[in-house]
Image (cartoon, rainbow, N blue to C red):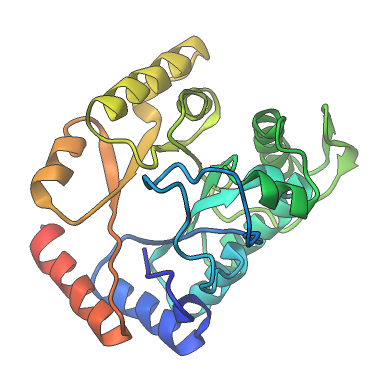
Length: 279
C-alpha cells in the first residue's frame, strides 16, 4: 500500500515510479482506497484509530479505479486492488463497467475490495442513503456479477432494475473480478462468508480476528459455500512473526504499508520487504 500523504498518489511520476518499483521488487499487488469527499466538520467516528478521526483529509485521494487504470498502464504483472472501494456510494451498473474495463485493460489484474463506508456525511454528499448501505452492498454484488457473467443480463432488485442489459467488455478473469469484502464488523464477516471471493478484515487483531473469522466461516457454511475457498487478506506492519501467526489462521495475503516521505525512501522499504519478509 503506497503512502496516502500529500500529493503522492496524484503525482504520475511518483505513484507510477512506486508501482514500477513494487513490481520490480516482486510484490504481488498494490492497494489503494477511496473517499469521494471528506466533509471538514463531520460527527461520524472513524473506527480505525482511537481519536475517531481520519488523518489524511487534506491529502490527495484519487478515484481508486482511475488510479489503478493508470497503474495498469505503467506495469505489466502486479495485481491492482482497492482496499477498499465504498460500494454503496456507487451505481453498481456503472461500477461493473468501470471494473470490467480496468480488468480487461490490465489483462486480468484487478481485485475489488469493497466496504460499506463509515462516514455518514460523505454518503449524504454523494447522494446515497446511509442506513441501508448494507442492503445496497449485498444487491450491488449480485448486480455486478450478473453484468460480468451474462451477455444479456436481467435483474429485478430493491434498488436496481434492468432487462436484457448488455455490458461489455467483460472482465478478463474467468468468473469476473474477485470481490473481497472489507470491514471489521460482524456484518462484514458474514457478508464475506455469504458473497465474497475474499475477506479483508480491516483493523482486526488477536481474539477479535479469530472471532470474526469463525463468523465468516459459519456464514459460508450456512450459504452452502466452502469457507476454505474464501481468501483472507490482512494488512499490517512487515513483521515476520506476526505475518506467520496470521498465515497459520488462513491469511494468504499481507498488505504492508510500504511508506516513506520520498519515492527513494519508499523504494528502500520495498526492497527491505522483498529481502527480509517475502522469503
